[in-house]
Length: 118
Image (cartoon, rainbow, N blue to C red; front, side):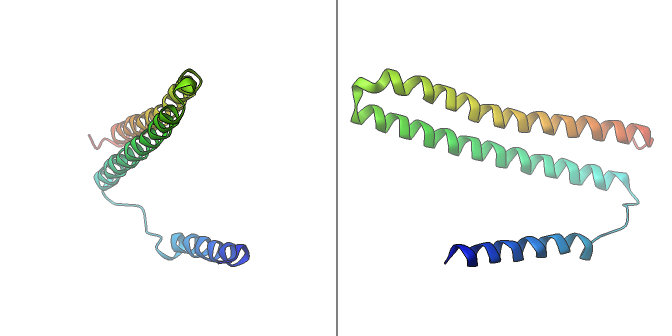
């Protein structure tokens, strides 16, 4: 597939996804608990995806570092420090997703309290 064709397909899919928001728009929910339930489900899926992606990234980084050390044991000192730094940065992204989930949960709790739904 050429780059031009790939760009055209990407733009077409992106445009279709933008149109979906308008096509499937709904009124505000009558029951605020349905919003709470949907937010809780979204938080769960978001954390699961972030944890999976972080674990996959950390596994790949460790694999590459260990292969590099196995091929050249003398370079282990130069490989180890950047690997640890990379693992820390990957883990920080997973922790950021956890903080976002906590923020959404706190925001949702405040919204429910304001509406008297709790």
